[in-house]
Every structure is written in structure tokens, then in C-alpha cells.
Amino acid sequence: MNEILAKRVLTPVTKLIVVKTPYVAQKAQAGQFIILRVRENGERIPLTIADFDREAGTITLVYQEVGLTTKLLGQLEVGDCILNLVGPLGVPAELPEKGTVVAVAGGVGVAPVLPKCKAMYERGVNVISIIGARSKDLIILEDEMRAVSHEVHICTDDGSRGFHGFVSDKLKELIDSGLKMDEVIAIGPMPMMRATCEVTRPYGIKTWVSMNPIMVDGTGMCGACRVTVGGETKFSCVDGPMFDGHLVDWQEAWRRANYYRDEEKAANDHHCQCGGGK
Image (cartoon, rainbow, N blue to C red; front, side):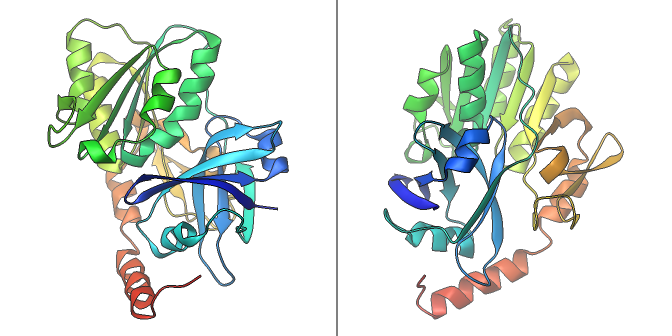
């Protein structure tokens, strides 16, 4: 169980794995996630289910090697097994049945946007996607996104490919061009999601974001993943991860996201000094 059946290197720091986990694959829906642990006494981290195949009993996970746990996960190869994996968790995304939806994804945020676009595309929704990264070599899953979108716009911060600028800038350009959109789904780094919400706010365009704060148990028991939405406390693991971006308290979310930066750095430094290893 939890065996890695396939692995792809998407960028120097981003990997994709296909994991055999029939029970999760059978129940998974767009917008849900899993929590995994690579080794005993290891950290438990959430990862969005980027795709699933019920017949094959597999799910697809995409992750960026930024912390100790994702680096340990990156060391696993085809044939290795993930120690613990639980899911599907979270509330499935509320996706429309018609109209035009613009999906805005930055960096590794393309992975959680993908299953939502796939579900909407299959329903007949007009899907327009904007995907971006710092440079062209960090763009991921472009072919997969083109397969489930009617239109795809590529953006790079450095102008090495496509639109020179942020994904939120491209969204503003589309709005100003007269494109009528019913909803926007924005997933990526917190500053990018917040910027996207500020672009859509004056136009009253419903904008969904995916909040991925620190999680521990994934059942709402620990309270670590709390976010304030519309003045109310919500838990991303059981109330989300999708929320109305115009109602999120972004200042609080940013503070909470940075609580353990020193501890994360210490864990990474210790891992490097010890020479890595599984």
C-alpha cells in the first residue's frame, strides 16, 4: 500500500508521483487532499490530490522540495512506499455547471488547479487558464492544463516566456479586454492569491482560493490550520481548503504561515549536516 508506481521530475525542485492507494482513489474528488508521513517520527504534511484514477486505484501528487519532509519524499523512488497516507480530506470544491471560469495558478499551484479544471471542462464549463512561474523552466503541467482548458495563458515574472508579469496582471488585462467571467479560482503562493483577489474585488467577481496553512491531524481537532474568513474562525482541513478569497483575513494568514520558519530552517540545516538519507 502507498507504493510509488511512477515518478516525474517537472522542474529542478518539483516532482510528480503516482501512488497506489485504492481506498483514497475510490473516494477522491476535485479539491480534496491527503496527509502523509514519510518516516517514523516525521512531520505530517498535506498535499492536494492533483489527479486520481479509480480503476487503477492511484492518485497523483505534485510537490515542491522546500522543506525537510518534501526533500525526504523526493528521495523516494518507484517501488518505494510512503509510510503513512490518509485521505481524501477536506471539502470537495464547489464547481459550477456552466458559464466561464478563469483558473489562475502560480508555481506549484498548477497542480491543485488541474483537477478542478478537469472537472469543469468535462461539465462543459468554459475554462480559461492562466499559469505562471518565476521563469519558463519552472512552468509545470502545461500539456495537462491545455487538455482541460479552452484557452491557456503562460506568464513568467522574468519575461522568459509568454506574458511578462504576474498572473494577477494577466487576469486584470483579460478583465479590461471585456472578458466576462463568472468565477475565478486562484491557487498558488499566498501573495499571489491575495493579489488576484484584489484584482477581482472591484468587479465583484467571485474568487475562490485554496488555503494551505500548517496542518497536524487533518480532522479539525488540533486547530493548527485555522483561518479567519468573513470574521469567523474556520479550519482549512474540514471547512476548506477552498474559501471565498474576498473574505479571508490575509494579514493573519501570512503571520501564521511564518510562525515556524526558524524551526523549518533548523530542520533543513540539520538534515544537510547529517548527509540526508531516508
